[in-house]
Length: 238
Image (cartoon, rainbow, N blue to C red; front, side, top):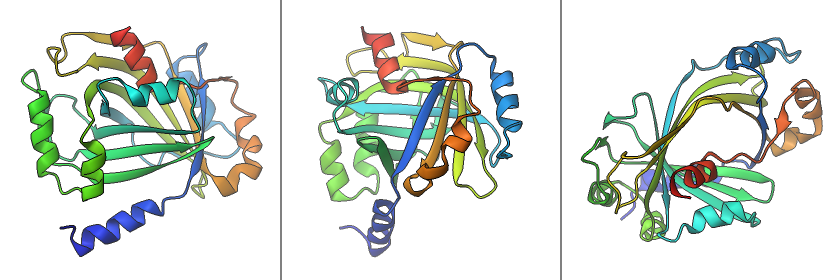
């Protein structure tokens, strides 16, 4: 049974506003130049968090249906991942299960606590299933996950910026790497690294769309539909 506290948290997650995420590829600048440009922006971005490594295990069906949804651009798309920060390998003490849901051009996230686990060369599909079964997830979430399995690990280094009022957030991602982690592969036997690409994301809630050009016009970057999940799948599988 789902506890009353869990039910309250689930309802709060479902209230998360939909937001826009504009993505840019800074392919002709260094990451230090990109960060300096953001700091000089007239909107006076601050750094609300220190930079850190972001790690994800992406889940998909055996036939990679989530990948297909994102490649072929369906109106309703989703990505499912287990996310944590800091070290990639070793004990993962505070993993979070995330559903990233897109509806046309806007999206939202639903998050749930996931049971701690260890990620190393001994990690298997059985390890994931054990952590999943023991995690305090609502029944409908468990039902959704029944057909999904780990297919990709990715990791990157992220800088965080935000306007003083918090209406506009910018992240800068670099040092990306991708690992094949499907059940019939030995974990981490194949890794692709991309230390050249720099992905900039401008994020804001729907109600702030009216003023977004005041922010984005100072970014001399190429607009992109970059998806780290799609990029990773194509790098390590195809």
